[in-house]
Amino acid sequence: MHVSDLSLDDFRSYHRLVISLEPGVTALIGPNGQGKTNLIEAVDYLSGLSSHRAGADTALVRRAGPGEEQPGGAVLRARVVHGRRPTVMELEIIAGRANRARLNRGSVRPRELLGVLRTVLFSPEDLALVREEPAGRRRLLDDLAVALRPALAGVRAEHDKILAQRAGLLRSARAARTPTASMLTTLEVWDAQLATAASRLIAARIDVVERLRPWVADAYGAVSADPSPAFIAYRSSLALHEGAPEPDPRAGGERPEVEAGLADADATAARLESAMRALRTREIDRGANLVGAHRDDLSLFLGPLPARGFASHGEQWSLALALRLASYEMLRHDVDAYGGDGEPVLLLDDVFSSLDDARRRALARLVAGARQVLVTAASEQDVPTELAGARWRVEGSELSRG
Image (cartoon, rainbow, N blue to C red; front, side):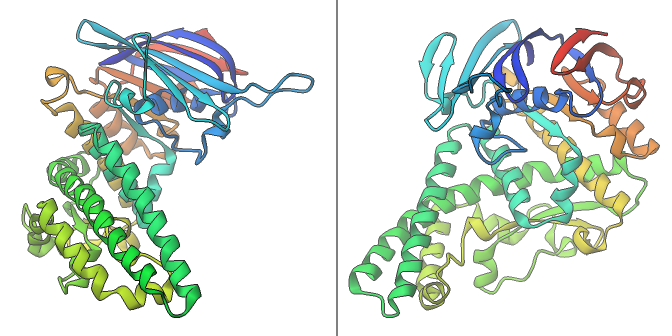
């Protein structure tokens, strides 16, 4: 698949942009702060309906200049080609209201846009996947699960809604000091609903981890001179509560036992309900949900050691790149997508300036043959020679062909 046309109205720094894109490599070149990343963000937003830089959609609407009326929203449109079949997708971001969407000129729910366009984004922030807390790694798994099966977006949203409501009830129970019978009965209802949603989300994550694992190992070997193999495993708060050991690459094999047990959503739901009952007093004391998908993690290893805390800066970068490259390969080989045309659009946002020469060359060689690659860079010299293709100059959110 590839994006053949893109238009933006009042998105970030763009008042109005219309651009035709080609398969292959397109580089967007210009100094920092000129709008390159905003354009990449727009393409990525149409893919996943979320921004990697903003928590709230209101931040995506262009801020009016002095004496100018503030836009009430932003509109993103793209023509996406699968084989010879084009699909036109449109998303209207409305400040303070629910977004609206159209698909081939017909109104749809925004969620129905998911799956039309797939993207894999590389950015300097990817280092956080290795260095930082589990939330980013959970998001990676959930984003990939939705890319594989767009219907899971509903499960993900329902899980987050139930989780927040149950947390609110736990806080109320803590404040009451002695929870009422009504509170405890309502908690049992939320237990069942949360367990059902969380178990489905966990099973989807397990599927992603099992698909991703061999690709991570291969990609890490391709971008790193490190002889230590890369290994990923799912770290389950439920399994740890039940007494299972921490993930260990030396004992994991191709399908760690803990992961195999979590792949059955119905069985996992029953286990989660049991764990919630056992943790009831502690959860009320803390006013927090203590077990489930929201407390799980993706464990990253280099050889026998966890990457977080033990890997060098260069090894961390190689592993972060491996996670993104593995995501690309996994989606590209998804035979259920558009008759096998699941290859995502690659978005490389100023990533080469953060890499040493060896990793720059390795990454460029690996992505050069992709169906479509959009690259941002401050200068032409930052774009590896392996990525020959179209060039656009970006200045003041205006584009000109280079």
